[in-house]
Image (spheres, rainbow, N blue to C red):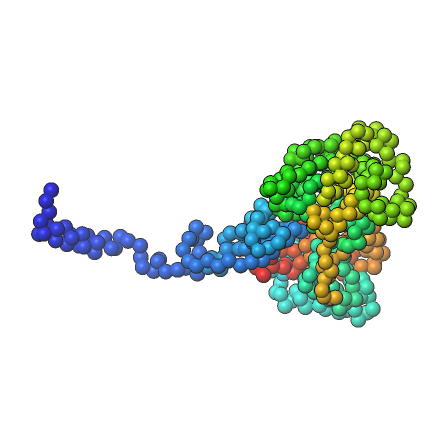
Length: 463
């Protein structure tokens, strides 16, 4: 249909008139204004976003992350490509950090107990009141000469935060105890016994030729899964050979499923198998002669009783297979031995892990490419690399002090002692003998429910 100029002007005029008529049916102008962050709808997509780099504190790995913040609210978590541990990757635990930030049950302010201990009856108080109560009681203990009765338990903290904790506790003459799940304490002790340091070393998986792991489900949840998975990916690809991966564990775990060879071993005998492998390496001259001399002569270990034929029945692995593993491990270096998880979860877990990690000394791969890379010392005397972790025996001694009235104030940060310590320590019963228990938790966990004073700390995404 041909449109004349007259008809075109008529249509345009009608459209303009219709726009004016129906303007009243549109969205009011005041609703188009940007709302304050407090009233912002969850599905808002307009506005400017900023990305902030920080560390994830959902687990002890401390992966580097960047957080997308829009109009003052954290919206998304991604891995930091410039952080050396994860290099842009990140775990689902990091993603869950937003859930922790916006958790509806977060404690919004200081609380003081008003009912019986453990009743869960608290009332809100001001920050000034809470800090004043704590400072007054700590000062009273110091003035009365009972400053040694002050104990602060935290997760393993290092760096500047560790320095702050140590300074705070020492000001009142108290002591600091690091807490983590009991299954990790034997691993830390073994690392210190073999390598002489408290912190976990780095495993240069991407540059090694052979990985021999004992119970360490490092492709699932053990250690730093993102770091290990990235290294494992490079271990399996590229111009180099694919690598040889042997996993020793009674359970067919995710890591075992990815291994070239899964070796079932009788539970608790992982250390015996490691010593048998060491015996083959030393007997056939496959390892570092100096390390072998230090292990056998200087340390007094006699490995002649751990020949493959002697231990095959106990460990559930044939002598031929033990010999084959030893030759593959020591003859195709660089090679790396990793132990943890189930291997350290027995009553002889410490001995198992010492034997396993000593294999790295035997093949001379400590601080070498494709081996075990130790952490450097802190350049600052007052800034620790990592806080020491109390052993089971130390927690047991603490409960004895609590029963005897030797602990007058117990402060707890990021350590749910009531839930995590074994019942055999008697901590739950002993806690009723402590006059003052202070929690810095942002959520009402088991220990916080038993506390007298709660000063909730902020979430790590609020730093």
